[in-house]
Length: 509
Ligand SMILES: Cc1cc2nc3c(=O)[nH]c(=O)nc-3n(C[C@H](O)[C@H](O)[C@H](O)COP(=O)(O)OP(=O)(O)OC[C@H]3O[C@@H](n4cnc5c(N)ncnc54)[C@H](O)[C@@H]3O)c2cc1C
Image (cartoon, rainbow, N blue to C red):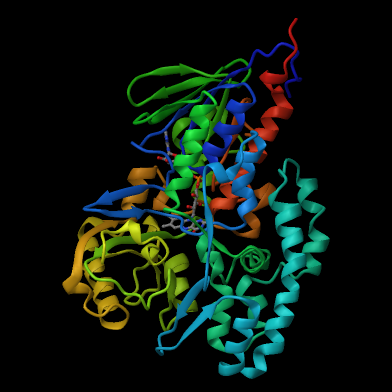
């Protein structure tokens, strides 16, 4: 490990990729006195949190929920800025509406509101719901405060949390923990589906991920006023105010490593540019960072075998559409379940087939921010979890029929008259995830959140193969989702500060 230097010599940093992990790191490093260049493959920053506009409809392409707020706000505070000068976070109520295939719905809101609804549909489950709620705080304290916020640099750091994890029944899945407390099928679905938000299978993700429900209860479901991409724009503005530079349409095709000491030297881009760097932070897909950007001979811990064997999150089939009428009865966030739950999840995660049925997350941002569509119109996206590219599905061929099927279903069951009122419509398939974000197998959330792929077992924030290489984003610790991407940015930059110090604090000779 490199000692903290008096006079700082390692000041050139390249950040590969401008997702939240890359942006959060770039801001912190630039503020600490490093000369940071962010290289982004696409024409805009944000990665999965992209944006596009069509005929007055503004579509956020990815994340729509921010919780807990402090993780996002800390990036601004840590560099001496007031987050409220950059973004406005607004609570959404109800958090979301769950629609079941029998035509009933259930709103997730406050504990009292939820309890009242349980009394109506399954009074015997009220006690079980409250018992389950009590389990969430210690799970959060272990899973978020002890697990997610620290790097796992040694196996020992992981071993230390095993006894408390066993006490909290982390060997159970998220679904298993809910099912051991509640009997009604709708409640089991309602309180167990949350890992899907970060690419996890509710039936195999460790119950530690039930902490998402705690975060939701404690901090609410927050929406960035104007859409999530406003947060990307705010970070870009902050980074540039600090003096950081961005190169768009700059795909990194190679990370160069010094043969003598296995230290990063720089990168080569698809445009043929060669840029030197003392430190590289990769926010690109972790499997692709190792398998396609770094020569095999430098990779012992991060072999192709490791990444080919790993289990990846599902992909998503996205339909962005705008209508020339509004649907005021639809809340901002909606989860539309199929009648099959466990079997559909198996089709997606294990069998890798496209089932006849599907579940949908229906996003209606104009419920909160009507200006995201022309007056009297509504902006939507339908997000359908589907298997990743191990399926071999030819999405070029499937995309039209599958889009038509989903829209017909929404027209017939939830959005009457939809098909006659669509003004604009765009589709994004697993193949697009693969091509646009260089996402291995077209994953939407990188490696699945499994116990065997978490903490020390997940690709490390500080590369164990290459000196000067750090990983941020959903593929490293702590995992998928917006808060984790921000946390990885903090964890990895703290490792850089501990390895190299901060140029801004370097002493003159
Ligand atoms: C539809 C959808 C909805 C979601 N909803 C939520 C939600 O509500 N709440 C939540 O918490 N999470 C949600 N998520 C997950 C969340 O968006 C992601 O986990 C998170 O944004 C990932 O951030 P990241 O730092 O890993 O970067 P990414 O967003 O993956 O960005 C990586 C960037 O790197 C660039 N890149 C890749 N390779 C290269 C290269 N070789 N050279 C240069 N650049 C490169 C890419 O173009 C991209 O811009 C959602 C995801 C999707 C897809």
